[in-house]
Amino acid sequence: MDSLIAVAGRALAAGDPLGALNLVALRDDPPALALRGIAMAQLGDLDRAKVLLRRAARAFGPKEAVARARCVVAEAEIALASRDLGWPAKALDAARATLEQHGDRVNAAHARYLEARRLLLIGRLDEAGRTLAELDSALLPPAHRAVHELVVAGIAMRRLQIAAARAALTRAERAARLADIPALTAEVESASLVLNKPAARLIARGKEHPLLLEGVEALQTSKALVVDACRHVVRDTRTVVSLARRPVLFALARALGEAWPGDVPRGTLLTRVFRARHVDDSHRARLRVEVARLRKVLRTLADVSATKRGFALAPRRAREVVVLARPVEEQHAAVLAFLSDGESWSSSALALALGASQRTVQRALDSLAATGKVQSFGRGRARRWVTPPVPGFSTTLLLPAPLSADQTAWQ
Image (tube, rainbow, N blue to C red; front, top):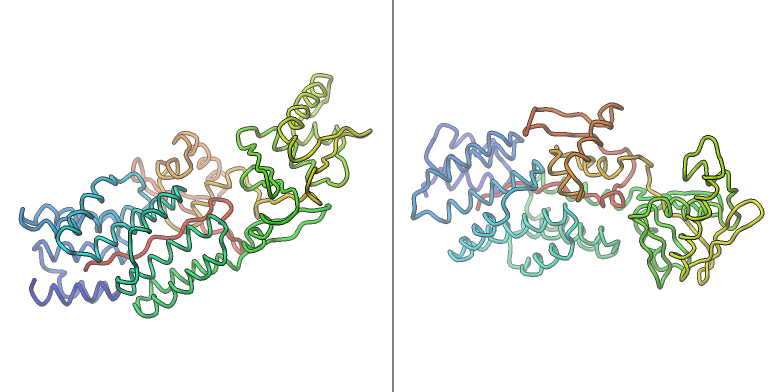
């Protein structure tokens, strides 16, 4: 490696892409192409970065397996930053194995972090945790320690372990200061802000107020019966009943929970749950059937009793009933929550992250675009969707919200 390549590599590691480009912008040898690609990625031109990295990977000779593996890792990071979640994980795993075999511990660890962040984005928290467990962050440079702690914090926030998340973010901030990379420091600060924004609304006895994530965590161990409209479950400290696949039953449970300790008139339930404009005997019969189903599903948690006006919820073990609602009620809230990370998403990546069909996601995007809540750029497979974050709110309970991709590093 010549001196210019070495200096350019150090500039990129320090977060100075312009300084690196000044040294290698006019060169077309494989190492320079790779460094130019990473520099363009740091500057935000991801399409140009991918082209340069692929040219570099093809140009490296058969004896330069480590250099090709580094190109694969860098391209995987660009894919993550552009929310192309369908990139081949096997290629990244093979590149990581090559780097480990040749003693490139830092970039091998970086490959694992990329996979962990991808798993975090698509909600596979256990796998992300196992991937992190295979790494000892204390042996890595400060920038990689900061990335490690960001992923740890992301997993903890998803699991509502807020004390662990705060501790991880404190460690990430300390490591980011040592790394002295402005973009990394900004990412840690952005992640920390999530903990200080309202993440949900608590509705109890006809009143509501915002909750931070600590409040949501505390609610899990409270003695209340919680109708959780963020995850569509009803729970107390002993039992959790999921109604995610039974929207009518959950709508009934939520209406009864919001009215507790009072009851809900039958007409109100018919209008709210079944959206009936003109009530007839068929609607009343269906209401009786659905209430009976809800009574059976919640039998270990509460009783659904009939009153003169309608129906009321009576918890068996809990002292009170509360409803945990999203900070912003929106038909396509999950799609908006993913887009709120500020990155550009393809419809296929959103479908993968949401576990839904691409057609379903596309219909949601079209509906949101018609109301001006999202916008797109590009055409065909290059089409991407973006939206600004919802001001003043954390989206952790909508996604829960992902963290943005860390910056590219070439070691």
